[in-house]
Image 1: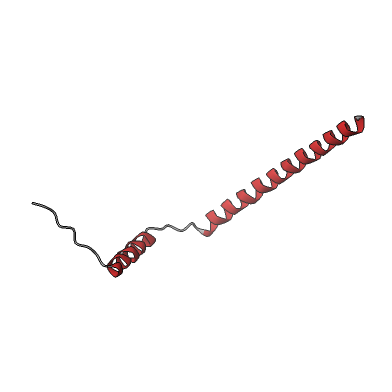
Image 2 (image 1 turned 90 degrees about the vertical axis):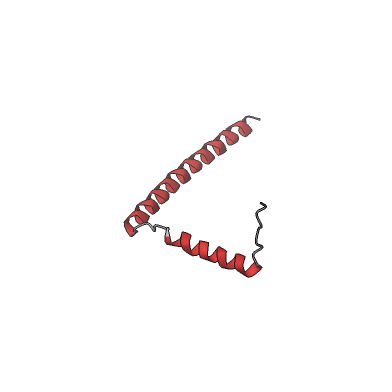
Length: 72
């Protein structure tokens, strides 16, 4: 016996999409304010450290290029 697929209309598909979206949105667990603050601080600290490292590498490479170019 062949299974018949019922074709859904465009609006039925959209309705199903938003129904699934609503269902998934209910499952979201938002972080607490404390967790958000901690994670933000970690990102800021790591960004500052990387910024300093990149600045150091840039300065060292400028010194190297300056030294090499002064030789020639």
